[in-house]
Length: 130
Image 1 (cartoon, one colour):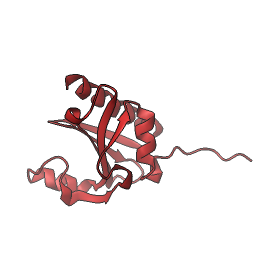
Image 2: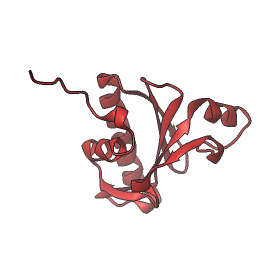
Image 3: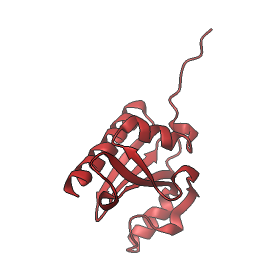
């Protein structure tokens, strides 16, 4: 389970670096029984994507991951009151493609693609050809 924990952590950090370089989101990473990545959107910093990785349900080849969109201010308020990291009161939107969690290879591009299916702001902006 330690190998899976390390791989999930690396995966979440890689996504965080990609988002930061692209100016899309900032990462707040928490290690508990599970690994929690909170990607706060730059374009709308009232929103944060909560991605949770489960080392005990992952394998050496694939990570078991769950994700959803949360209200950043409500999440901060829940934490201030001592609630758990991913408090349900702050959820804005469940992601249909993560409804029961998914298993993906430890590949940041795949995780970014799956998250972008739910959050259009995460799609890289491309220049139009004239």
